[in-house]
Image (cartoon, rainbow, N blue to C red; front, side, top):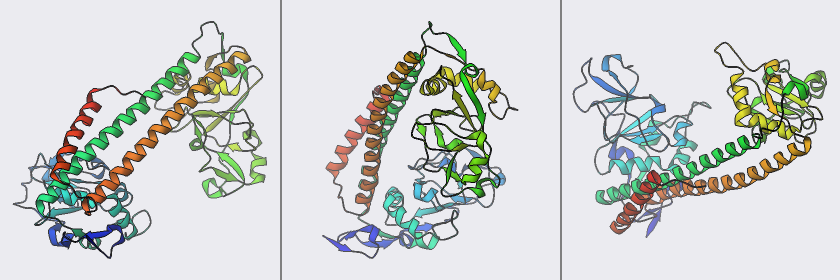
Length: 440
């Protein structure tokens, strides 16, 4: 039997679980539990990036107490960390501090620290505050300016709790430990399958251009145009919400153009930038920045557009199929030449001259199109497999979230038999993930 409560995220309260609030069972922002450390005593230091979104914490770094910034947040073994700032809070950053190599630790100023006092099992409290449904509710109640919103101490302390007896809390925490370990191991196995697919796709591309009977040529020998554009006057401030697309490096990907965040320019600006007009069949290559080397082609149904200075247009002549050329540049052989062409600390990108010197095999147009068809067939099959695997990962992730919520709010009751069963299953899943090869 259950009773309604005032916070919608909680659902109905189990009638046999007493209600409380975090402030009644845990101390927020606690002080030293003993004497402060000596100036030369090592203390663990944990910045935000050393805490994961799924409760893991890296405690491998330490400093002398006298060298640690006075503004950092104190915590100890047995405490619960809760990231208070957006987007870390929404992403689930936080941890139960199982153990520390030092007596004291100091973390990011953006952590709330909860120290369980009485009536609550520490790991149960961690899962309660980790609960993604609770975090979504907390996000709705953050305060502060956009990009700097935080969960207030008052909100966290006033968070309502359902508290079953301590042995039951311990059982719930152990059940969630085992369940989450099994789910996480299954997700890791799925990600390895995607890695395997990517490796196979790379091998397919390598073999597609490995015929030793094909003569080599250079890009400049089959290119009617090699060139880039510019950023219009005014930069990003001059971009429009509609008009002519301006293709930037973030729009160029190996699997095609992505126009969900494309910038637009005015028609007259487009006309004035005639040197960077796009044509269907143009090969596009990112030549600067972190995405250097990403390559695709302009599809036949593309109407009009421009590129900026970070994207190079390669417009082939009648001797080369645009899809074939884009596939080669995307292949291990092509990427090797692209990436080696701008090696050096002082080099900012790939010049059009260097790009023109890249060599590639050039069979007849008929053979090029057959190669493209074979690559597209393989890519289609791999894409379907990837989508299936990603769907499975999404299902596992959603189940993990709902399981935590149901267990800590009493919607799912955990018995000793449940705990024994999941512990056995989780051990097998984790062992299989660690020792068995994965197959896509």
